[in-house]
Amino acid sequence: MGIFRRRRQLPQQPPPDLPYPPPPPTLAPGDLAAARQVVRAFLAGLGDDDRMCTAGTAVVQAGGGVADLDQLMRNVRLIHQTGDLGIDRPWRWLAVVTAEARQLGDLALVADIAHFVHLWDTRLRSRITSGELTMALQAPPQDAVREIYAIVVAALAEVDPDHVVADGTGGITLAALRTGIAHRILDADPPYPAEVSAEARRITPT
Image 1 (tube, rainbow, N blue to C red):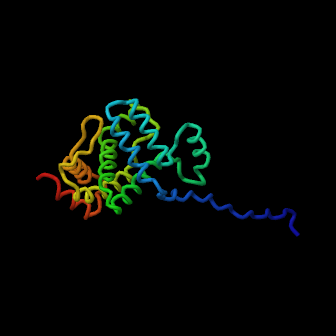
Image 2 (cartoon, helix red, strand yellow):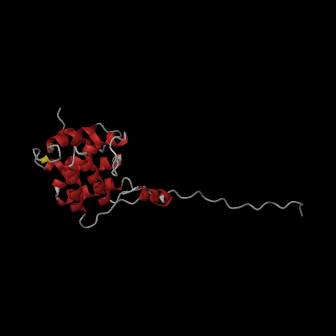
Image 3 (tube, one colour):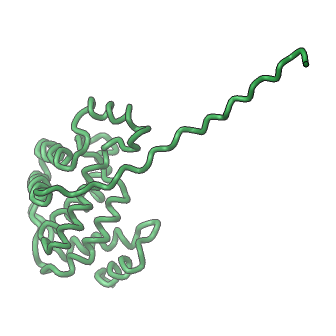
């Protein structure tokens, strides 16, 4: 018998499992009506930062986002279980709403959301990231933007191009909105799926 006992080998503990991606949002009864109300309220307040902030908070609440710092801190503590801070939830909710609205033929709502997202993607994102505009609603994640653009670039082909999506500054025609979104699609890196890019090329001026 040896003088020294062999040290017992302890089983190696496996690394903690990484959290799964958060489940995609699901729609509840009344979500399309809620989205229509909060998106149009935001568009109506365009140009007035106070009204935009109030309407942005309503978008956060409707989409199940982070309403205050306390909720954000709770989400931070749970991030290893949920994989979700909740900041992007309103945008992912809008993506689901957009798909459902198109399926139901509610193209007016698709157009409103398209204008709302395009504004954030092209004009408001830099104001948020620079701290110039402080809102509960944060800049949209690119994957949600891509999902919405891929839906609307085809769906809006079915709407009168002279239709105006109203906002606090007057609005934008569907033709101009589709062209703007098409340019964003064609400039994207990584590229959009081939069928989406083909639709974007079809509607952009040569």
